[in-house]
View (tube, rainbow over the protein chains, first blue to last red):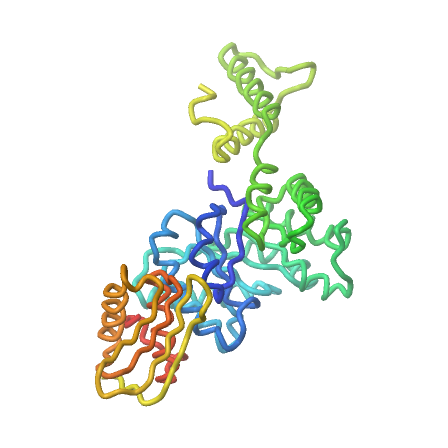
Length: 295
Length: 97
């Protein structure tokens, strides 16, 4: 099970962060060549990320790069660099339509073919507009390379002609729609950044909320947010005990040819058993449970 | 051979970074200021020579002010400075980088 709870944004122009981001152990490091990089430093950031991706310090962490739009003077150069450097995922900036994804896919395929790469670079589409949200279902299903869709809230609320609040009501429709689109396509769904790094309580509230909705993870802007997010996503002791009990009871029922079973008066059927199994998988992947603790 | 006929620079003086300035010269000249010069000065100069050789540059003056940069940071900054001097950033030969 690959965890994608934390996706840490690292500006490609910030050398110190580029060199040290792996230390904080996010599930995915997301180097940014787009909004966080000044026009005058697009070339230097691109080369920095090109080399960082090939450095041994990033060999064991999933890497992603947010490239500039293909229609900009930088998008194709960014792609040339990061595909050659072996990035795992290309994050598309503002994805409004299926064509945005297919254009990026075609450009990547062309480069992979040119360099004889056997690696199939994955795509992550950032949904940052009302049009993108409306098209999310089609976008999520348009490419086998697409591993997820992500909400980009700042641009989205601007498009909605409103602003972000701590309560997040302005994002509720987009979050639900993006999550449904991702689940229907069986790909990952990622929530937007929580930019007020000093508001830990607000961050905890938001992560708890988006985890409850079903998001796989969240983009982060500060390494300090990683451990908090991971601990919220890790199953609790009670959840693990419940899951183990469900699995044990279902195995017992199967062995003795019993039909529907119940635990504490609650019916346990296939979806409950599947959920229990995923709790155990997540517990193991999160490191809160040993690989053989359920044997 | 790529001729360096104008100046180029890249990088910053922030920690973990390096500021590199290059300018035309008759041969290869490397000037290094680094807090870790005693330990890694020779390695940094060897890395600079390796980058220049790969990019086929036979004559250039390279001023390096290192603030504890990793090897790949020095490489990226030097290549950026060279591509800027060559005004070649929009069509780099990736096989040389």
